[in-house]
Image (cartoon, rainbow, N blue to C red; front, side, top):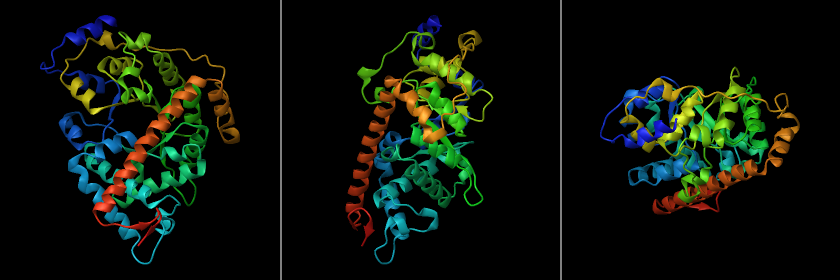
Length: 375
């Protein structure tokens, strides 16, 4: 496929083409952006899902045109707390949890931005639980349910919502609880994110996740360009290609769909399409590039398969609160490092987002005692 990448780099950007349409005929294409303008630019293609995370939300929220959204979110949450000092724990049965007011405002902001993209989708909107609770099963469950309740309060049904949860042992355990309906609590669609290994993907399938999202690149490459390794032939050379190929093969026939993420350039998109996942989520800049490129010969996108020969095929990764998954991660320190680095980066973005909320609250005259009580 190396000749393919040479040809791509020789194609002038002003030549319109059908590459994006061609890719959509092979896999479901999702929008990895919360920018409604990006969705509108490609309306003729109709996206399935919209994916997001703390980095995407923080970036989109700080656009000048979205300044009023955070103020609206602040006012929305304030209406939930009207009356004597009322903590976030007492918002009501459908929004009951022990996370602070600033976090609740940010969730409302996330939902409101997602709602702007929602009309351009045939599938689901995605939102990610806080990285601060990635190693706490119960807090992850609470946060996931709160996000879904907020979406429903804003007119988006839970069936059209998917909650992204880092694929740590605690996170996967939370996914199992959320994905399992009970007489009083309906099931919630979940996506296991920050997936870098086959054991994580198998655990996601065992937990009943709607999606598993293996990262093609470490998250850090989107923050520090010097950490990204550009391969001439990523489907053959990139170290994650065989991992994702094995995940696709292992999860085939399960109820968990594979949605690769963290993609840096067009050749990586094409490499992933050749692996035939169920979905692929693509950033707005890459979608813009793909939309002006011509279709390729079918041979250039031929299916690249992989045999699954791992010894953990029949391992129960959910037993004992994910003990087998924890062991697999300990035995693969590089995967464990990549997961933790992604969580740390998301946490940094979340802290920036919280500061943005606080500054917006101060501008609008909102006050609260500490983080929990309005006055």
